[in-house]
Length: 252
Image (cartoon, rainbow, N blue to C red; front, top):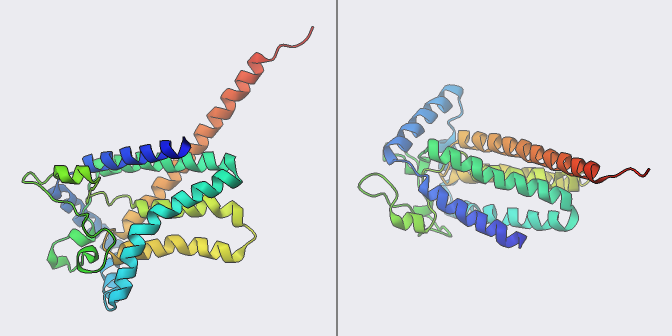
Protein backbone atom coordinates (compact mmCIF):
# COMPACT_ATOMS: atom_id res chain seq x y z
CA UNK A 1 0.00 0.00 0.00
CA UNK A 2 2.87 2.34 0.79
CA UNK A 3 4.47 1.70 -2.59
CA UNK A 4 1.17 2.14 -4.44
CA UNK A 5 0.53 5.40 -2.59
CA UNK A 6 3.95 6.83 -3.45
CA UNK A 7 3.60 5.76 -7.09
CA UNK A 8 0.19 7.43 -7.31
CA UNK A 9 1.57 10.65 -5.80
CA UNK A 10 4.44 10.62 -8.30
CA UNK A 11 2.06 10.17 -11.24
CA UNK A 12 -0.06 13.07 -10.00
CA UNK A 13 3.12 15.12 -9.58
CA UNK A 14 4.13 14.35 -13.17
CA UNK A 15 0.81 15.52 -14.55
CA UNK A 16 0.80 18.68 -12.44
CA UNK A 17 4.36 19.40 -13.55
CA UNK A 18 3.24 19.24 -17.17
CA UNK A 19 0.29 21.50 -16.48
CA UNK A 20 2.55 24.01 -14.69
CA UNK A 21 4.48 24.79 -17.88
CA UNK A 22 4.68 28.48 -18.70
CA UNK A 23 5.08 30.10 -22.09
CA UNK A 24 8.21 29.71 -24.18
CA UNK A 25 8.71 33.49 -24.18
CA UNK A 26 8.69 33.74 -20.37
CA UNK A 27 10.90 30.67 -20.01
CA UNK A 28 13.39 32.19 -22.44
CA UNK A 29 13.39 35.54 -20.64
CA UNK A 30 13.99 33.85 -17.30
CA UNK A 31 16.85 31.82 -18.80
CA UNK A 32 18.56 34.96 -20.10
CA UNK A 33 18.19 36.65 -16.71
CA UNK A 34 19.58 33.63 -14.90
CA UNK A 35 22.50 33.38 -17.33
CA UNK A 36 23.37 37.01 -16.68
CA UNK A 37 23.41 36.31 -12.94
CA UNK A 38 25.71 33.32 -13.48
CA UNK A 39 28.02 35.39 -15.66
CA UNK A 40 28.16 38.12 -13.03
CA UNK A 41 29.29 35.62 -10.38
CA UNK A 42 31.53 33.64 -12.73
CA UNK A 43 29.35 30.53 -12.65
CA UNK A 44 28.44 30.18 -16.34
CA UNK A 45 30.55 27.12 -17.08
CA UNK A 46 27.81 24.96 -18.65
CA UNK A 47 28.98 25.41 -22.24
CA UNK A 48 32.63 24.70 -21.38
CA UNK A 49 31.74 21.45 -19.59
CA UNK A 50 29.48 20.37 -22.44
CA UNK A 51 32.07 21.15 -25.11
CA UNK A 52 34.64 18.97 -23.29
CA UNK A 53 32.23 16.02 -23.19
CA UNK A 54 31.16 16.42 -26.82
CA UNK A 55 34.64 15.44 -27.98
CA UNK A 56 33.82 11.76 -27.31
CA UNK A 57 30.46 10.37 -28.45
CA UNK A 58 30.27 7.49 -25.99
CA UNK A 59 30.87 9.85 -23.08
CA UNK A 60 27.81 11.89 -24.06
CA UNK A 61 25.79 8.71 -24.57
CA UNK A 62 26.78 7.54 -21.08
CA UNK A 63 25.62 10.78 -19.47
CA UNK A 64 22.36 10.64 -21.44
CA UNK A 65 21.78 7.13 -20.14
CA UNK A 66 22.76 8.15 -16.60
CA UNK A 67 20.33 11.06 -16.75
CA UNK A 68 17.38 8.92 -17.80
CA UNK A 69 17.84 5.98 -15.42
CA UNK A 70 19.58 6.45 -12.09
CA UNK A 71 17.48 9.51 -11.20
CA UNK A 72 14.46 7.24 -10.81
CA UNK A 73 16.11 4.02 -9.64
CA UNK A 74 18.17 5.48 -6.77
CA UNK A 75 15.30 6.97 -4.69
CA UNK A 76 13.31 3.74 -4.97
CA UNK A 77 16.28 1.66 -3.83
CA UNK A 78 16.95 4.03 -0.93
CA UNK A 79 13.33 3.96 0.24
CA UNK A 80 13.44 0.15 0.28
CA UNK A 81 16.68 0.16 2.28
CA UNK A 82 15.31 2.63 4.81
CA UNK A 83 12.02 0.70 5.09
CA UNK A 84 13.91 -2.48 6.01
CA UNK A 85 16.68 -1.02 8.16
CA UNK A 86 15.38 2.13 9.85
CA UNK A 87 11.59 2.49 9.67
CA UNK A 88 11.54 5.74 11.67
CA UNK A 89 14.07 7.37 9.33
CA UNK A 90 12.14 5.99 6.38
CA UNK A 91 9.09 8.03 7.40
CA UNK A 92 11.14 11.21 7.78
CA UNK A 93 12.94 10.84 4.46
CA UNK A 94 9.78 9.73 2.65
CA UNK A 95 8.04 12.88 3.86
CA UNK A 96 11.05 14.94 2.79
CA UNK A 97 10.92 13.45 -0.70
CA UNK A 98 7.19 14.07 -1.05
CA UNK A 99 7.55 17.68 0.09
CA UNK A 100 10.18 18.24 -2.63
CA UNK A 101 7.44 17.34 -5.13
CA UNK A 102 5.20 20.10 -3.79
CA UNK A 103 7.90 22.78 -3.58
CA UNK A 104 9.18 21.87 -7.02
CA UNK A 105 5.71 22.31 -8.52
CA UNK A 106 5.43 25.80 -7.02
CA UNK A 107 8.68 26.89 -8.66
CA UNK A 108 7.80 25.22 -11.97
CA UNK A 109 4.53 27.14 -12.01
CA UNK A 110 5.87 30.58 -11.12
CA UNK A 111 9.35 30.42 -12.63
CA UNK A 112 9.31 28.57 -15.97
CA UNK A 113 12.89 28.29 -17.13
CA UNK A 114 14.31 27.25 -20.49
CA UNK A 115 17.23 24.81 -20.09
CA UNK A 116 20.49 25.36 -21.97
CA UNK A 117 19.66 22.67 -24.57
CA UNK A 118 16.63 24.66 -25.79
CA UNK A 119 18.35 28.03 -26.03
CA UNK A 120 18.70 29.62 -29.50
CA UNK A 121 21.59 28.29 -31.65
CA UNK A 122 23.53 31.52 -31.05
CA UNK A 123 24.18 30.34 -27.47
CA UNK A 124 25.93 27.20 -28.81
CA UNK A 125 24.39 24.69 -26.40
CA UNK A 126 23.65 21.20 -27.71
CA UNK A 127 20.55 19.11 -27.03
CA UNK A 128 22.41 15.82 -26.49
CA UNK A 129 19.13 13.92 -26.20
CA UNK A 130 18.42 14.65 -29.86
CA UNK A 131 21.89 14.28 -31.32
CA UNK A 132 23.25 11.35 -29.30
CA UNK A 133 21.95 8.06 -27.92
CA UNK A 134 19.29 8.64 -25.28
CA UNK A 135 17.03 6.21 -23.45
CA UNK A 136 13.96 8.45 -23.90
CA UNK A 137 14.86 10.28 -27.10
CA UNK A 138 11.23 10.23 -28.19
CA UNK A 139 10.04 12.16 -25.16
CA UNK A 140 10.20 15.78 -26.25
CA UNK A 141 7.82 18.65 -25.68
CA UNK A 142 5.91 20.14 -28.60
CA UNK A 143 4.66 23.71 -28.30
CA UNK A 144 1.38 24.86 -29.77
CA UNK A 145 0.63 28.15 -31.49
CA UNK A 146 0.12 29.86 -28.13
CA UNK A 147 3.56 28.81 -26.86
CA UNK A 148 1.93 26.33 -24.49
CA UNK A 149 2.63 22.58 -24.26
CA UNK A 150 0.30 20.48 -26.39
CA UNK A 151 -2.03 17.78 -25.10
CA UNK A 152 0.52 15.15 -26.09
CA UNK A 153 2.91 16.68 -23.57
CA UNK A 154 0.33 16.41 -20.81
CA UNK A 155 -0.18 12.77 -21.70
CA UNK A 156 3.51 12.00 -21.21
CA UNK A 157 4.00 14.26 -18.22
CA UNK A 158 6.54 16.47 -19.98
CA UNK A 159 7.51 20.03 -19.13
CA UNK A 160 10.65 21.24 -20.85
CA UNK A 161 10.57 24.45 -18.82
CA UNK A 162 10.70 22.70 -15.41
CA UNK A 163 14.40 23.42 -15.02
CA UNK A 164 14.33 25.32 -11.72
CA UNK A 165 14.91 23.59 -9.38
CA UNK A 166 16.85 20.64 -10.74
CA UNK A 167 15.03 17.68 -9.22
CA UNK A 168 17.90 15.48 -10.36
CA UNK A 169 20.13 17.39 -7.95
CA UNK A 170 17.45 17.50 -5.25
CA UNK A 171 16.85 13.77 -5.27
CA UNK A 172 20.50 12.73 -5.66
CA UNK A 173 21.45 14.86 -2.65
CA UNK A 174 18.43 13.42 -0.82
CA UNK A 175 20.01 9.98 -1.35
CA UNK A 176 23.14 11.15 0.48
CA UNK A 177 21.13 12.69 3.31
CA UNK A 178 18.99 9.57 3.68
CA UNK A 179 21.81 7.03 3.74
CA UNK A 180 24.56 8.96 5.50
CA UNK A 181 23.76 7.71 9.06
CA UNK A 182 23.91 4.13 7.78
CA UNK A 183 27.48 4.48 6.42
CA UNK A 184 29.12 6.70 9.03
CA UNK A 185 32.01 4.30 9.64
CA UNK A 186 32.42 3.13 6.07
CA UNK A 187 34.71 5.56 4.32
CA UNK A 188 34.43 3.89 0.91
CA UNK A 189 30.62 4.05 0.93
CA UNK A 190 30.74 7.64 2.13
CA UNK A 191 32.95 8.51 -0.82
CA UNK A 192 30.55 6.82 -3.26
CA UNK A 193 27.63 8.70 -1.75
CA UNK A 194 29.35 12.05 -2.13
CA UNK A 195 30.38 11.25 -5.70
CA UNK A 196 26.82 10.39 -6.69
CA UNK A 197 25.28 13.92 -6.62
CA UNK A 198 28.52 15.28 -8.09
CA UNK A 199 28.09 12.87 -11.00
CA UNK A 200 24.51 14.08 -11.42
CA UNK A 201 25.73 17.68 -11.49
CA UNK A 202 28.13 16.79 -14.31
CA UNK A 203 25.35 14.82 -16.00
CA UNK A 204 22.75 17.62 -16.08
CA UNK A 205 25.41 20.04 -17.30
CA UNK A 206 26.76 17.83 -20.09
CA UNK A 207 23.26 17.00 -21.32
CA UNK A 208 22.24 20.67 -21.31
CA UNK A 209 19.24 20.02 -19.10
CA UNK A 210 20.09 22.46 -16.31
CA UNK A 211 21.98 25.59 -15.42
CA UNK A 212 24.27 25.53 -12.39
CA UNK A 213 21.87 27.74 -10.44
CA UNK A 214 19.19 25.10 -10.99
CA UNK A 215 21.36 22.85 -8.83
CA UNK A 216 21.53 25.54 -6.16
CA UNK A 217 17.76 25.77 -6.32
CA UNK A 218 17.58 22.01 -5.89
CA UNK A 219 19.68 22.15 -2.73
CA UNK A 220 17.53 24.94 -1.30
CA UNK A 221 14.36 22.95 -1.99
CA UNK A 222 15.84 19.89 -0.29
CA UNK A 223 16.87 21.90 2.79
CA UNK A 224 13.41 23.41 3.09
CA UNK A 225 11.73 20.04 2.57
CA UNK A 226 13.84 18.39 5.27
CA UNK A 227 13.04 21.15 7.75
CA UNK A 228 9.33 20.81 7.00
CA UNK A 229 9.54 17.03 7.42
CA UNK A 230 11.17 17.51 10.83
CA UNK A 231 8.41 19.96 11.79
CA UNK A 232 5.75 17.43 10.78
CA UNK A 233 7.55 14.80 12.83
CA UNK A 234 7.64 17.03 15.91
CA UNK A 235 3.93 17.83 15.57
CA UNK A 236 3.14 14.13 15.39
CA UNK A 237 5.20 13.40 18.51
CA UNK A 238 3.53 16.25 20.38
CA UNK A 239 0.05 15.00 19.45
CA UNK A 240 0.84 11.45 20.51
CA UNK A 241 2.24 12.71 23.81
CA UNK A 242 -0.84 14.84 24.43
CA UNK A 243 -3.11 11.93 23.56
CA UNK A 244 -1.24 9.61 25.90
CA UNK A 245 -1.36 12.16 28.71
CA UNK A 246 -5.09 12.70 28.18
CA UNK A 247 -5.84 8.99 28.31
CA UNK A 248 -3.87 8.48 31.53
CA UNK A 249 -6.14 8.28 34.58
CA UNK A 250 -4.24 8.31 37.89
CA UNK A 251 -5.33 5.69 40.40
CA UNK A 252 -6.97 6.92 43.61
